[in-house]
Image (cartoon, rainbow, N blue to C red; front, side, top):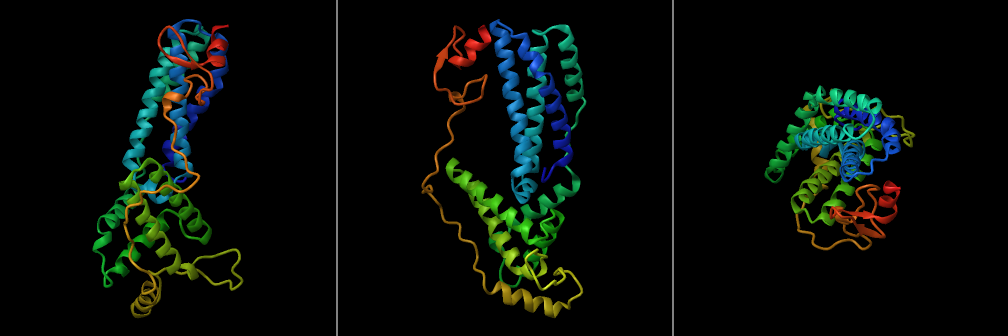
Length: 295
């Protein structure tokens, strides 16, 4: 995980334990309506846990930092969903498997997800930058870059490679926000990308790059250089950059398709249904999957 490593470690351990006993759950093949629904709920809970773990490993570090509270809430919801679904499954499987499930439930109930204080502090500082983004003028641009540099350093965005990875992650978030037509998220991520580009250009000579034949040593704007030299360097670079323009973007890029509704996915396979059928309970499933469960 890029951020929230402790929470990811806790959830990942439980996720792997549930996956290890899942073959035994499938062998039980509950034929009742409640049994099928219980297994479906466990499928969905596992998918939620998988998604949040993937989110923390692939998303932008800057975005993960500023959305710490929302990420924590997702972890809590994933935990609750796993506990509820496991308890439902425990009643429909043999006692030997049920005891393993109860052990996992007990572990989950004693798990407490907490944000890393240092990551939360970084997130709060970046949020402060976002809130005053349009208020910065030429005289205070130095302070903006100084704060952003410290935050990026705390998040280990200290090399050209990590800066490139961060920009790519932010671009993916912008594309997703446009598909979802989430203007607020798009504006926030666009401003983060603006700061990231500004940071990358300003400190490009300070970052160690494997293709750099000069062998220069990276330095920090908070290093030993005099205030006058640092201010002049900042001024020369900042004069090249314009301020961000938050224009609404209504058009989608060609080739982008909207995310299909979850209702079109089979609760068993979690894949888009090609041959959907409705059972007596009113629930819709992929024909092949539901027939397999009833065999």
